[in-house]
Image (cartoon, rainbow, N blue to C red; front, side):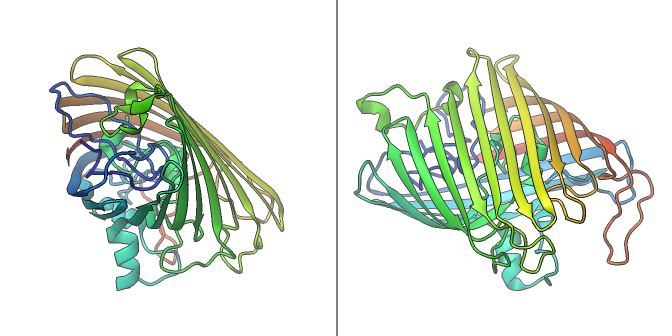
Length: 412
C-alpha cells in the first residue's frame, strides 16, 4: 500500500506523503513528508489510480485577545477564538507504466494565508493556482540507470522537514522555519537514484512563490541529497510499504537564485540557501528530529544573512497516545536600509510548542497544543490592533501564547 494517495514513483524526493493505509490495528507515528523528505517507491509497472484527502478542523485561543482575530506568524492555525477549517484537501494520483501524475486541491484557512501575491488583484487565474491548487505534477521514470526520473509542475516548496498536512507532523502548528519559507514553487526536476540509500535531485524553478508569473530576475536552482539507513540488498528497491519513521534518514539541499522582485532597492542579489535536517529513532517509542535553515545574500546595502534551527522530540506514551515538543529560533541580520529576507521588524524570533496527539484509530488524530512565540520586535497582535491606510494590521506585541484543540482525519 502506498502513502498518501498512491505515490508509486513520483519523482525523486517529491512526496510519498504519510498517512499509510496500514493493515495493522495499532497506530504508528507519522513520517515527515515534505517533498524532499521521502524518496519515491522504486516499484511497479502497470496501471493504478488512487484517491486521497484529509480534513483539519481546529479551535485556537490567543491569550493576547487580539481584535484582529489573528495569531500572527502562524501559517494556517491563524484564527483566534473561532472554530475553523484549517485545510481540506482532495487528491488523485495515477500511474501508467513509468508515467505518473498527481493533482491535489485545497481550501480552508490555508488558502487565505497563501493568498494572492502582494500588489496583485484577485483573479480567476491567481485564485486557481495560489488558493485552490496545492500540487499538480507529471512524472516519467526513464529506463536510464536505476530509474532516473523527470518531473515538472507545481510543488509544495521543498523546505524544512515539516509537511503541509497536520497528520504528517508531530505538532499541529508548523515551526517558525516552515512559516518563513516559501509555500509553492513551479518548475522541473531530475532525480538520480544512487543505490537504495542515496539519491540526488536537481530542480530549476521560478522564484519563490512565483506561480502565475515570475517577478524575480532569473530562475532558482535547488540541489537535494537524500539518505535513508535502509539495509542494502536485492529487496531495497521494493519499499512501497516501508515505515521510514523506524529508520534514520537525512537530507541536505542547496538553493541558489535571485529572490528579490524586479526593481527592489536591494537589487538583483543572488541568495544562497541551505536546508538540512535529520530524523533519528531512539528505540521503539522515542524519536528526535533536527532542522537547520540558513540563507545568505549580498545586496546593494551590504550582507544579509539568516539562520534558523528547530529541534523536535516525540515519545509514544501508550498504544494510542503521543507527546511531542519542539523548540525553534531564527536570527537575521539585515543591513541598514534593506528589507529582511524573512524577518521585518525584528532580528530574533523563536517559539516553544508542546503537543498531545491521541490516535484512537489509524486515520484519526486529536490534538491538544500549547505554544509560546517571542521576538525582539513587534511582530504579533495584542488587544486593540490598529490598521494602516491599506488595511494591513499593525503589529503591537513581541509575543503571544496560544492554546489549540484540533481534529484531523485522512484517507488512505
